[in-house]
Length: 293
Length: 239
Image (spheres, one colour):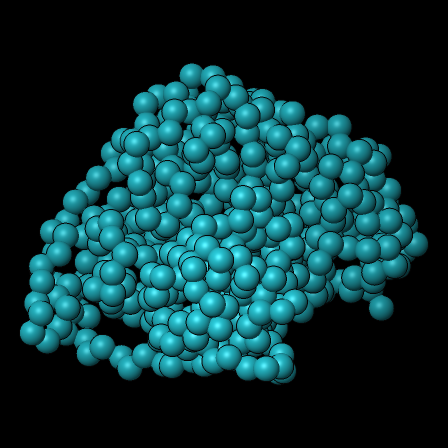
């Protein structure tokens, strides 16, 4: 059997794909990889379809034994694996890959040629930690079968993600943008410990609460909501599907992957862009990923 | 750049009470549009939301998720495949095409509830706050049909409308760290059922054995928006 044995799971390692869509009206957000660009790149490097299930490690990685000859790729942050990132690497059966604590951002992805074979739940293999959909975080001793998601040869050349401005998140105006001044764009905000796949709590200069009252409404991925204490909450991949706090801004699609790499104590600033600018930044990212096919 | 306001005559209530309403469609992000029907909680607005949800139910390329709420629907789409302008005209078309769609019959779902005791540790507090006997709190709570306005916040959680005003009780000063799934609770002027175990600040008055959310089922949520719900007092918690 072609499989991966989990020797040590790491701090929080889950199986992820690009998300479970179509269930928000049941209260279930899409979930999926926190850094979707890294997951896609890792899959494309090993010759998989981009949506193949892969491992998402958080802050501290695990140790994994491969019982057959295989090809893997690591993408995202450097978790001290003694293997190059952004490169397909070939292995002999019996190889153990050990990860340590992150040297850069919050998440590292491990894609294996063929993908990880786990049952699809409501159309996705993505783990939703809140409900346990798609399984939970990996545990020592778990055996993960390798699937058949390979569609082309592994890529021989390594790649590099495009350069991005450090600590700057671009946002478009949120539905209640005209309730707020430009306070969000003045200071920098520090990611708090109580941050996870559901959301990132930020702390910095308080944003004055607007006077208006609003009804609970649907919230998109990347929404920045301002509760009465004025400290922003950035809603992330396992976010609540509706919310009642006003939202001055929303992180652009092209920068969501970098949100997935933010760690507690990281500092971020926000810059307002237009939707057209957001879409052209997204196109640039897509061109890079397309070049890996 | 947000703020495309549309005035639509297509969303009549149907029958005799024809109304003209204003629909506001604004981008909520570079991958979503928010359609809103005003700023009030009412059965009328709920019907507009329900009608739009039905109109958008047919799959369309690049549509990822629909998030209904009291008076709005958020539409998530794949910005690599669709533009805001396309989605906006799709919404407009679908509203127009569904203007004459008949209202569908709403289902009545009975939820058996074991009130009080260890399942409803806050029943006495609710009785004290409302000045009612605990038996009267139960009787009132189980006396009406509630409307599922929408499911949101957490998986399978129903926002219910219609609780008798006498039962309104403020939330706990500090939320509990863990509220068991199936807990029936009052929070301010609202009542609800915790669909999964989660933290929560509402007053717990009972519990149901009915699992409102089952991640292994499709659909995973037992209730759907538009359903009517009635709580039926039972002596024992049984599946």
